[in-house]
Image (cartoon, rainbow, N blue to C red):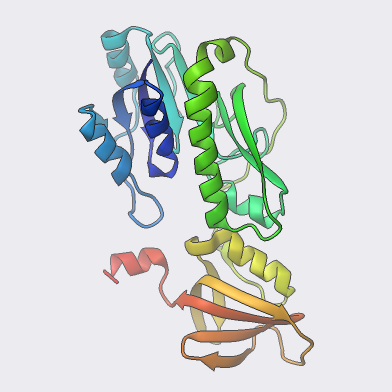
Length: 288
């Protein structure tokens, strides 16, 4: 089957899996990336190797009309990590589907992985669904890949699990069974929408217990949490901790060794191992 892909490297393995299953790419729709949190170098290189057009701007009706003129309805629009709502594909593409990193209808929204760790989900998953034109992540479900999470799940491990699950969906149910599944999708029903995480969600509160603080560190991982170290704002990529009775005020710095900083929490201590006074974005802008 021919397909146009809309996305970035986040779930770019879907592109590779479909090509590996014998599908033929005809166009890549992607978007500008910051090179820190978002990347598209791999999918762009793959598209150029396949000698297909690459479009960085938002998909417009004229783009869908052009694909329809070239291929009729004998193609699928596959979306994975694309931020803009796409309308007008019906009657122009044979299929249009989105691959979302949550077990829908739970976790609609731009990036639900952080909260999956914060809220202690025991299982998670990736969903392929019909691309809805009236909202994000609400279309009928075509296939899901569900997997377990550990009690000490990290953002990086969950991201890898989602990427691997997305590739399994693409190479299996989608590549082999899409026409049949398209005829009998499962409506989602009521669900939950999770907004994009903000700085408040990323901020460590040392008045909390050690387990809660470390879960927040794991939930954001190398995307970084934010901590106050004395009068300094710190962006934290890695920390560990332990429970221990003490008389320090939460947030007090009780020990330093080189760049490692130990901070008092409600019921123990947090040792901050990797941190910077600059966020990843700021460090990238300064050429650090």
